[in-house]
Image (cartoon, rainbow, N blue to C red; front, side, top):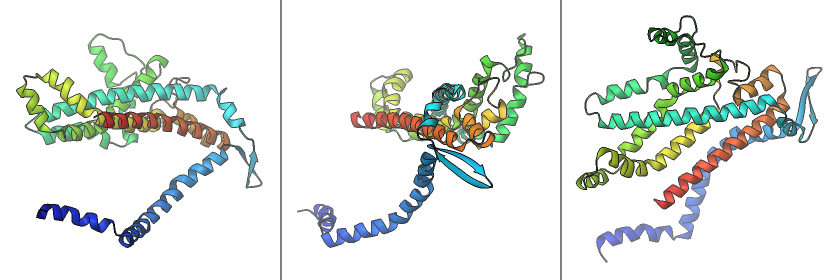
Length: 311
């Protein structure tokens, strides 16, 4: 037996010691226990309370909260709620449209940044600037940019001979305008994840592709994209979940209008809870949204697992 083999087998012999394994297991639970208890207290209990409230009517009498059990009535009412349907529909359009745009632009920017040899740090700082701006400032910036009377977008279009357009006040373009603002805001998030993924790819694979005569397009299609699929799926899952929670941009730019053109589900929930004070019905709506987002996340992570297994 060589010295190297002896070094490799020595920890294996220690791991088979039952007393030491028991001590390690106890230490692991002692260190993991507080974090587990905190996670249950901060996550599981509020969700359990939300689920319980979804089966109740919550009213107030003489300054006291009164809860009345209504069973599945709130969930049945969701199917006939036109605002809930519009919120889900608009949120799906918003989420998939915004995430698709952010991923395409983020990937292109990350590819460009890997090819740049001079001033790379400066380009990175410029690319990630929008994600550092608070949401309230972004709402103000784009409210001014898209203004019908004095917005820079209409001013630029007038120089090209195009008539000004009410981007946020027209049902046909209001949701598209919010999607465009969200793409501008969150593309740097995809850019950072894709850049980290591209810089971690094995360079010997690209050197072998160049030796085989692969051009830039073939290298992108047959080498870069297959190796980046796990990163692409994880980025897609992250952004999809975050896109479902959009609220500030919609509230600041359109407040859900005109009509229900930009009525996303977060804005509908805000109205039910805080404007109409319907805690029970709002809780049922929240549970339905959590179920939908969890379903989409499971599908994305299953695709990520299958991709990892095949690779």
